[in-house]
Image (cartoon, rainbow, N blue to C red; front, side, top):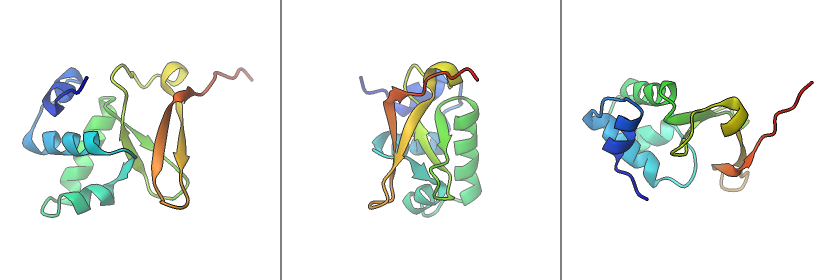
Length: 116
């Protein structure tokens, strides 16, 4: 089922401004996680702070998750439709390819809870 950006934003209680809709649409089109620089390159005439604020809002509302893939650059990927960003049920693996320098969510591989 393909959801519209406006629907996704409304489901997360995010006001669908024109810029947020464009950023959401861009994220929906991606097959890998993206950095703030990737967004900047896609939206040349938009200020970096506007893009960053959109990503932060999306993260705070559980629409995207931030990934530290070891490259030193934060990446962002859309959460699954039913994701609540709960550590016990939604935490999954990520794969960073050293050849293409892209990071992918491995949603089918959830991290098990470990009691220490």
